[in-house]
Image (cartoon, rainbow, N blue to C red; front, side, top):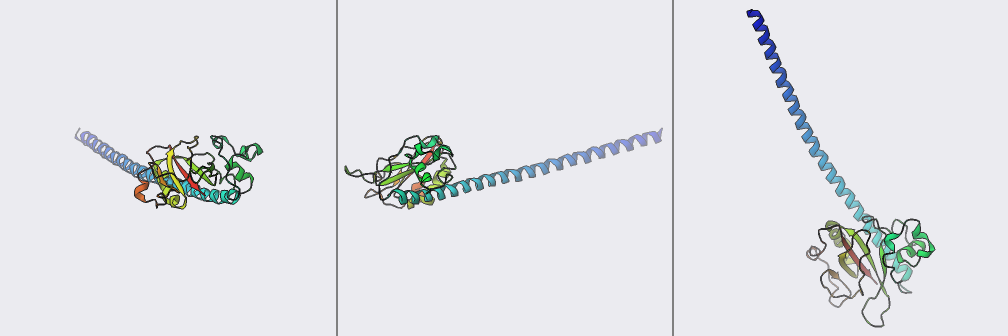
Length: 231
């Protein structure tokens, strides 16, 4: 009888030890999963930042290419009138159609000044909306300048782009225009520095855009649009 009791106690102790070991294994698994989850979350954040940074870098490069192409093609003859809302409806095929040559961004592609990919805002997925604009509000002023809009930006993207290229352009403004929507064009490039206008050809508008000024624009939405202007 005593021997049987000892056997039962031995089995009970072994079972307790097994339960304890199994509990420790589960705890270890939970800890490992927690560490893996934290690392994975960090990797996702870094990947998102890298992707956003890459998109902005390409977009900035595209705006520089467009500016040079536009000046090369139209500076001596005057810039064409913009075609409102047309650019957001184009495709890689239709941008090459002769009927769309009146659309400034399409004409630059058809003239061989830009590639199709350079003509597109990779963040919003739209082709850049652009067109001729007066450089002054004078009654005899023709379309001696042009504007270029970058729509569908979130707050961080909007401010990042302004700090990179804002001071390279004659006119810089921020308006609301989500992806798929053309931003409102300025009536001229010599606007006064009112709310949303950071730089212009106005007598008092040739200023350096500071970080403090940049923090005063771009809302916490994905509907920001930067309007750039150049002669």
